[in-house]
Length: 93
Image (cartoon, rainbow, N blue to C red):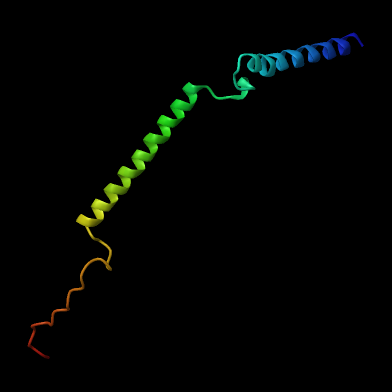
C-alpha cells in the first residue's frame, strides 16, 4: 500500500511540474504554450535546408533529362521516318 501511495504522490508531482513548466511559465513569460513539444529552430532550419537541396536536385535532374532528349532523340515517334530503299539487285534467278 505504501508503494501505491508513493506512486500516486509521484504522479501528482510530475503532473504539477508539467503544468507549471508547459503552461504557467510560458503564459507568464508571453511565450507559446507547450515548448516541450515544439521543434527547435535549429531542427527546422536543417529540415528546410535538406528539402531545398532535394528540390534543387530534382530540378537539375529534370533539366538534364530534357537536354538529353533534345540531343539524343531515341524514341521512334521523335525520329523522322526514313523511306525504304529499293534493292538495286537486277539479277533474277
